[in-house]
Amino acid sequence: MRYRRISSSRKPGPGGSSDGWVEERRGCTVRFLMFLGVFTFVLAGTGAGETNLLKNGDFSQGAAGWSDVHAADATEIAVVEAAGRKALLLRRRQAAAKVQTTQFNIRLKPQTLYRLSVTGWGDIPAKVALRPSSSSDPDFFNLCKSWATSTAPLETGKSPSVNTFLYDSGLKADSAFVSLYLSGETPGEFHVAAISLLEAGSSAPSPDETVIVHLGDSITITSYLSFQQRVEALLQAKLAGAFPAKKIRNVNLGVDGEFLGEMLDSGRYDKVIRENYKKIDVAVIRYGANDRRMYSVDRFKELLGALCDNLVGDYPGIIIVIGTGPYIHGSENANRHQYGPYWQAASEFAAARNYPLVEIYKRFEAEASEKTAVKKGDAHPSAYGVSVMADAEFEVLSKLLRAK
Image (cartoon, rainbow, N blue to C red):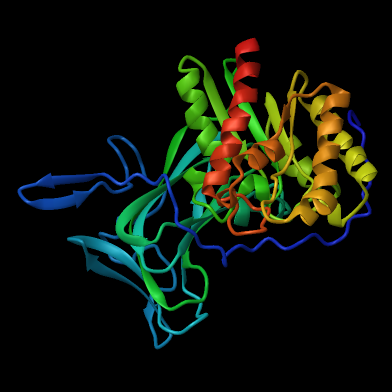
């Protein structure tokens, strides 16, 4: 075996559901065209020559291809006329009632990029989920943890907004299903005007492309934010603007509630990273928020070293970047005694190994504002907080890319 393993005496990790977090979303662009006094919104859909892998993604054929269409006392899923065209209505009449529709048996090709886009609006939050699986590896479905990595809330409001996600199938995923559902428990409704899953190109290893993978917990994946508000999307735009001649791709594999021991012991590192991605040029690693509940600071450093050793052994020439977690405004006890020691340990580890460090803790502290968190005293960054994180990561990554 080319890399060393360290057992972590794995314990059950903290939970990761974030349906209860709803906040004002920023950064979703909606364009309106006015022609002869009629407003027409630009819908997510297929362009010229593009094939939508989802059947009836514009609902022009009613509910064909979508499961569980019905009308009942507690819930309703139906195709209706809205804003001058067909739209899928998801309605909850009774609190906590489940409302979900799914399209199954979507075939995927290996090492292929797919662009998932959803256009919709509503008065309660809905979500879209892309759930890949592998016929060659039954464990992949659970270990890839797509309930965090490729699931996101859809923006509420009276006007339609577009949520877009770029998915890399890697070597393992060969099928998937896509679900649309209402999150939370509040009665209300959401309209989906269009949904598409388009093939966007190859993700096969290329010497002229830099692949950046983000590893960590909920602070890294921020599954409670829309796809375009997450750190990989913000970085993708920043790096593309700064390096227009370079091919750069960001992949976020963070998972709510994850800790280093779980990553190493569960098989997730082997099956979702090592066996699934042939090429990784840069790994941005940020753990500690959940590790603090599992083991000591010294053990955290040891496991962080094990993960880095695995990556270096599996991806020769890889650049490791270590990140600290956020400063929590209004909670000095958490900063000093709970999270702080693990952020300090990450910083010391980076210095000892001469790895670049993204110092989020100090950046958040300098912000001197509670708006970097989803709520007061919370370690999870808000959309604004993620933008601060992306700025800090951009400074480090742009120096590395210029050096390359």
